[in-house]
Length: 479
Image (tube, rainbow, N blue to C red; front, top):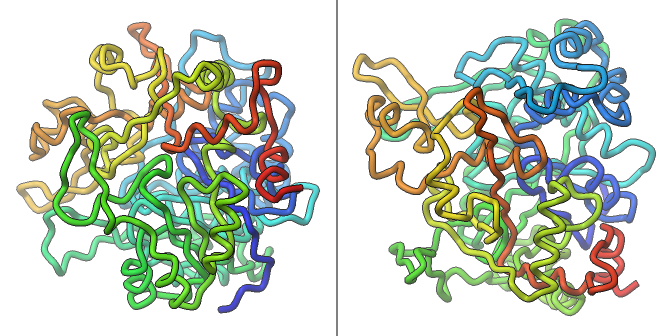
């Protein structure tokens, strides 16, 4: 399936929970590049915005466009609070996904993804993508379908090897029933546990009313040409290109190739084998974009000269005006940059996924070991839960960031819980939606950026500590 839409030179990274929000993606798309919304946890994001009173009425405007008004009315009845919830009230949370989710949970997840993409595409003809994680498997079918109902142009997926997604996109474009094969750690090789999604069952009558959908371009995020070749061989459908991330990119990183070695700060050590081989990527014959440290005009040109279609940039957009990063956190991080004190570490343990994860060192966040230790271990969102087999052969759900005794009671190894963070709750707090606990505890944020955080200094100075997404694009393109 060849490209039927323009190839952007710049892909804006799909960051965090609601950091790459619809406002940021829309601004980038309007500037002629690929704006990307983060698809992670959008059900909880939609709930939070509605409970905050839906400032600007953006959620309700998008919801009114969804072609299944009965479910929209139900969502508003459950979650919308005119004027917003009391400041000390907790947010409601969606049920955690299981292999047999309720129809309402699938509806909520589908509509939340629809809303984010619809708003990002509203009022212009630019291109918009959505970023999802292979490690967050159970909501992915509903998320993909919702994004496609809104006309998403690109699907970008990392944190794993998404061999199933391309074929699923082919089927969802025709509203066909699909199923996602789930990872079952320690399961027998023949284990085949799947979560189903049938558009007609979730939204009776909707497939016939809207007709065939645009099949979006699919770009897996990879770390090497070897993985690109493996995906092309094993994928259930066509892949249109790749985003190739170097280890200095923000968020989740691929583990180093070879035996894991750590430096004296506990960070994974990457070596020459982990460098991007652009020549081998070029030989594959599909468009590719280089990511991790490319937020400079000369680095964009280097990527183009090496045969790339362009670059993916995250950190520079994460701190711009339109991003969803909580404003006090944004100001604090920009202040650190001005004073030369900003730093980023790659944690080998904080993510429950087991993938290395970049953490910006910032006061008041869970990068502070004392604050991390003081946090009560709670797992009430479950986006990063994984399956396990109980002694009786049935399936259960666990996360190494949940309470240690609960994890161990489910057959988990206590050592796997050491240093794990609840990225679900932490990242919602980073976007300005911290959960408040009955005991008064308020969830704290955890900020992720790339090691190239210093690239942001191109856009700030003591007299001007704010900049826009368009400033980033103009600078990189030399406009």
